[in-house]
Length: 224
Length: 237
Image 1 (cartoon, rainbow over the protein chains, first blue to last red):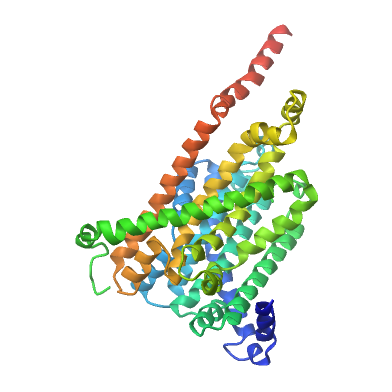
Image 2 (image 1 turned 30 degrees about the horizontal axis):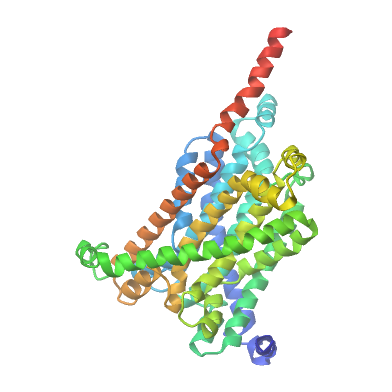
């Protein structure tokens, strides 16, 4: 239980809570990288998932590409892009986006594909055009699954953004990498704990999003 | 990169045996061992959760919190205890698979039809024999589906362990490639890692088909039956 005491000591030291290398600043950086990576991934994956799911065309190709991306070693992508573009935000975003796109894409595609054909027919019968069917019927019905995809991606991104510190960028990973370099294990453990806290906050955020965005009639459907 | 080509084929042929071949084998071992460890932990945990449902929510939360711990931190934290042995990579990677495997074991067992369970009881199967000979085989496709996801995730995550010097193909990426500013080993590491993931995924599909022969022709029958029944009814009316 020694370790636990060290970690609480480290967390409660006042010097950790101020300055550009303090916990609040690192937490904000980490949140910033993760948020940006998730936003970029969603901008790529959601439209592609909606379109392939709606038209039924290119779905196999999208799923295959997502499978390849899922198998990519994050650290390899990170380091290849560092060699190509230098240290900075670009390699970190490339690695995190490659990680986050597959779950969002697959869940969006499956969500739209899984919409009951009768619901789709009813929408057409009401005179909706393809675009309206997609945005006003398929998207809301697929939303629970899309949110599950986004949540999976977000938690993986938050946990993996720690690698950003290894290529000289900030975030909570700094505590882990610097703690290891200085043999201060309470710092490594403290950094890891903060990452877990952020992941739990993300999970809570998605719970709230589900509560407020998903239509009441759909909330009891399986998918999460 | 100084305008050097992305792939130096000469380097690849010169290093095909060592380090490329050795790192690939190491990578295979470092992914297989965590999967085995994860399965050995997930099966009893999942079976217990399926039997005593109140156990499931806390276990589910626990394995998901474990999953959120960054892998580098777990590797660094284990280093003082396990040193530079393979366990430093195997233990964290094995624990991560639980977040995928435990829910699949539980939902696989929950999907066993009640009449199947009752038939086993009526045939005089005790709880243990029923579990091993009836429930687990019926749940196998769902468990293997989880194993496939866990296998691909583990194979892609092993490389991170190169930061503590035990990364299989990650060593190729980090020491041969990144530290020497030489892209070829990085590309080789990425390509082989993805290829390994696909081969293992394919082997798991084949293994599942071999282990559950009854699922191979069940689907077409199940799909055909309602249609035939419907047609017969229509004819009668």
